[in-house]
Length: 359
Image (cartoon, rainbow, N blue to C red):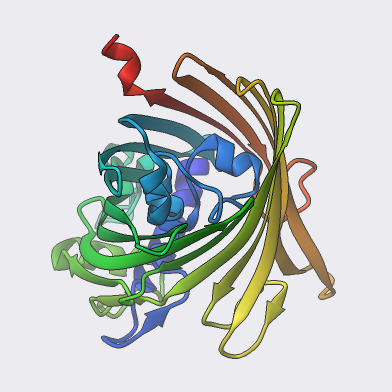
């Protein structure tokens, strides 16, 4: 039943790839906005100002200049009752004292979906032998570069992204876009700005017309017209400010507040016809740079209930981390208490300081 339900979603989503060559989609390539790294999820993704490791390639490439050695990061999460899998891998290294590079890969996919378009044959009979399986997957490949500027405390970074999206044999696309990030540190304060899709990331779809012809008859009155093939992702901004406090050398406390901005009307907490934004906040308590406790709240959304009344949803997260001799394992539980429209997820990630293998 789950797979059949997913296939119906697939049929509907295929028709909304685009409706014209100049259409702008508010939620295009949305899998690239989920986030990475269980430590960041534990802080409700409020890390744009404080990020300073291999995962900075995603959150704010300017933070890569804080790397002292090569690092590797891996993450896995499951969504929608383990139907969808979300995986991430990243590698980053310093080039010198003032610059660094990184490479990351993201995959969000649903595998083994039932294709029931041929379930009923030309004679009107149900033939279960005609059921086949297919997968839908989105891939994001990101190359990052960061550099320190002459002004003390000011770092910049850029991302070049290649997007690959595949819907079985029905359709596939290639896309390209750029991100840019800035970090500025003054005393114990950190400020960050991440601008995603600053070039309005462009996706070009290729649709198999023979396969589309099969879909045209699957749901009466739908999927009758071949979709257009151009998709554009509009820019998004994330601004943040953070500060870290150290107590007696052994205890640390990091707090950050972020503001997430979209240039479109959405169901964010504050929204108008051309602009919407929602806040988030997170903290991390550390002990002897080994044990970490994290928490955060974000994703404030206006949710319309079944009775037509609006309510405010939010997503509280918690997380734990353990670090020892260059190996860091993190866990996050997102949307505790089911306070938002999103489903909770268990997220695990691993980060390695690759210098430990050289000793």
